[in-house]
Length: 428
Image (cartoon, one colour):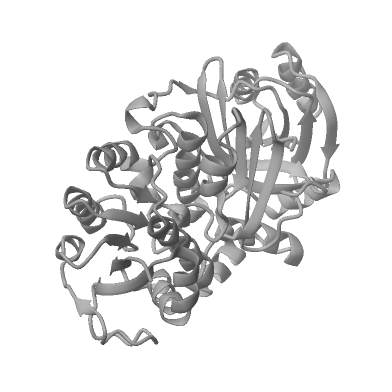
């Protein structure tokens, strides 16, 4: 038997417990696959006496995760606490400064501090592995950095928040309004303590920022991302999209353009027959496109004890095998500070608005669109609600800045009752 890899695990929530279960259950298999004995030296969590359903008496306990990260009998620090700053960041930095490798599931920390942490790790000869930070059990980081290393990546796209996908598919299947399904998801424990991290697109945005860095050789730039959550969507949007052969997804898209790096996380319409359109419930999907491979689609569970712990252990096994790669696929000091770019790729858009039910109202909207250089593909007017008329318009392909000018002009027509909702139609 070869070397022993000793872990220090900080954070004993769902994922931490899942990691301990795998190590206890699959010890022989892990050794056979890595040539190393993978053990746990010490653990840390906020509460010591909580019953977590797995034996912990064999492991030393540290109240302070920083102390855990710097123990002499810890080779790899496994950070599963979460949070962009605070104990997670302090303990990660302490581990790297002590010459320890790090495995983390912390997308927020990497999205905010990824460049600085990568530079620190590489200056100390350490690695940071983070497969579990993006899309749960889907091996998307490994696919992007290793499997597609010979490709010039052209686009990264995906559904990366299972809670939002659950809400949207549940609204559609049950015909329920957003508020009802939001509360249902909350009661089921699907939402973060701060729900805006999920429904506001922040959690998924963190993941997209990490993928964009690895895909395009840029410094992580979460603060430059266009973010829009799902809170404005209604059951009418869901139904109208279905009538036209589309489904609505909270979709992340990143691509490098002539103007710079485009990163957006927002609701989009996708063809119902596409892989993304067929995605149900809490499942995640990431689409990677490269100049040599064309397109690959990765689908699987985006969260949960088993899938996320599986991703953590994949990273631990790679370290045990001696695989040592730069954090984002190339040396941190070669990552470029990308110029943020608004979405300039033309696309069709779905527009929903409520107009005053009076002669000429719809004509004014059509005129505004025409004057902005936007042509109408389809238009529907639904049952009137008293003096108001709900209207749905699908445009032909147009630039977003032209659409924004049109939406601003619509507000000045005097016939708009509610601000228009505009949703991009993404061809995939």
